[in-house]
Length: 349
Image (cartoon, rainbow, N blue to C red; front, side):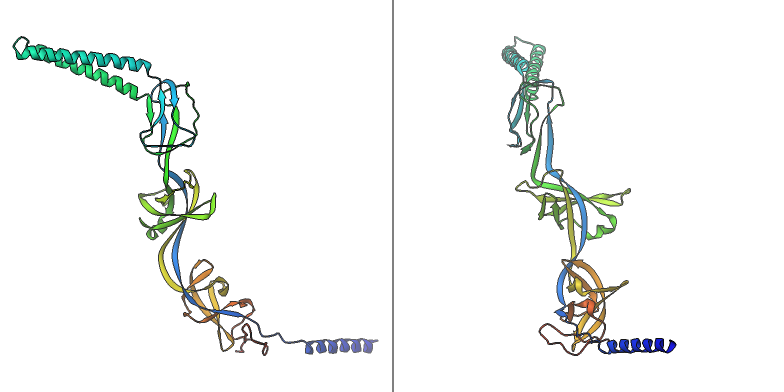
């Protein structure tokens, strides 16, 4: 029984050895290479900002009165100084007429007294009293005109008005909102930058901003102002950029992501797939005489699918960009178009 068991084990062992002997060697790995090339890189600052109108004002009723006319359409354009709304001014017009009549009468009386004074029939005191009366009458007329002017609401600058929520005939109290006028021909975009990144930005630096409403359309502008004071709570500084907005695509209140590219430079670059990580170390493979050579490199920023190589690689070296995971240092490789050669293997040490 025991001899039968030993014979069975021996047969199984020989069969296993035979299978190992029949194992085929792995073919030489196929890789693709590309030359390390120069590319433009920049240190980037990313932020989130809120769009604001270049100018914006809420037009309110200056007095409690009835609205007699509305002179704008929903979302319409108004020129600077254009009448937006008119409030009733019947009483004020009557007061103005009375004040102007009194002013005219006082002026004529002043002229008569002046003539009498010139001929010696009026005293200086009477002339001075009439001058004061004429000035008071003119002041009363000017006050009446100002009161009427308060009942005519005008646009302080050119822009687009909001949707109106009030109609002619309504009684409004002082301070009631009539319309909001916004100049959105250009946009103020405010965002914050950490103080640690402050050295990378400056006035006049270009920016790109993207909104959720237009994800495929970057808006460009420039940094206009940097707040001279850093917020001690957030350790960040407020920055304002100006974006042209000729087609009014950007609306005040929009949330926009901002990207600032600074310190542009030329550096050696390779595709991201060409860089291999091992802990904190980074490597690339170059091909020399059909052998893969592992080179340690120091990397910089990643941008548009490529990695900046600060040291360890020269321009023009053939870097493996496809098939990196199949390689080991010293392994024989073949390039596209070449027939399979002898099996590859790592160099013995």
